[in-house]
Amino acid sequence: MVRGYLDHLTVERGLAANTIRAYRRDLDRYLTTLAGAGVTDLDQVTAGQVADHLAALREGDQQHPRLAAASAARAVSAVRGLHRFAHRERLVAADVAVRQVPPTPPRRLPKALDVEAVLRLLTVAGADGGPRGLRDRALLELLYGTGARVSEAVGADVDDLDLSDDLADNLAEGTMVLYGKGGRTRLVPIGGYSVAAVRAWLAGGRPALAASGRGGPALFLNTRGGRLSRQSAWSILRAAAGRAGLPVEGPHAVSPHTLRHCFATHLLDGGADVRVVQELLGHASVTTTQVYTLVTVDRLREVYATAHPRAR
Image (cartoon, rainbow, N blue to C red; front, side, top):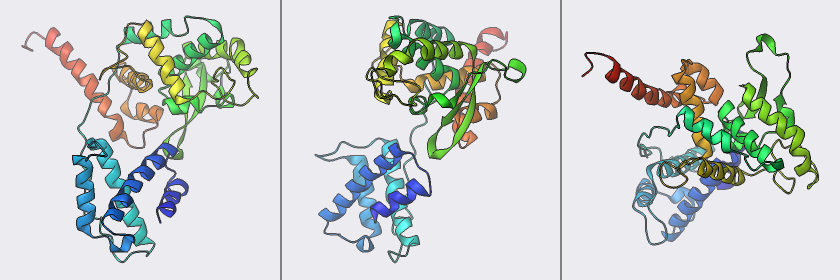
């Protein structure tokens, strides 16, 4: 039944592979809990057993640490979805998980660097030179210049780029197709700095690394000529952040998602409409994008407090 539910999420809902893997882990733990209680059929589960399992996730045990609110909310969604799917397919008589409500994760503001810090980061990226240096600079320029998720950047192919010089009105130097969550595809503009870095990589770096492998369509390659992984992209950014004097450990450590936050925050600070930023980020709902407006409002308060004669 779990396999049928996950297939449904993959094929009909179009959920990302990482989400499917997380749901599978959540459901494997749920089934283990049920088996420990002697329950082997989903139709035997009671609402109380569902509630007890979900409460145990937040409390933890000897084998598992307590889950954070966001992880617990995902686990609740996985369990609720499984029971809803089984009931809709008439595999069980009732949906016993329908009343379970996911915990509300604390609202955390995105971490964003100021423009000067981002420019310092990009300047030191790829400072070692050579094919790897050209790749590293192009990757970070593209992450900041497009707001792409790291999975979207490393999943991109060369053919997803259009770096033509004669785009209408010269509003951007290029465009790129990004394949986001839920199978959603979007076309984003690429600015001149990103285009220059990507062109340098394609001309002077990628052919050298591609020669080490069998060839392939991936835009960013590793030293073996294969597609660059998300973990390698994280390591590239971590190394550049260290050279730029930015934090690489602790709650304020720079991550690939930091550049996505910077992209959105700097656009809004520059006067971009939140709906435009939503489209560029590939958010399904503008509510997700509006968290960035809280960051800019804080900056507006700072300006107001220092500039207005009656602010204090």
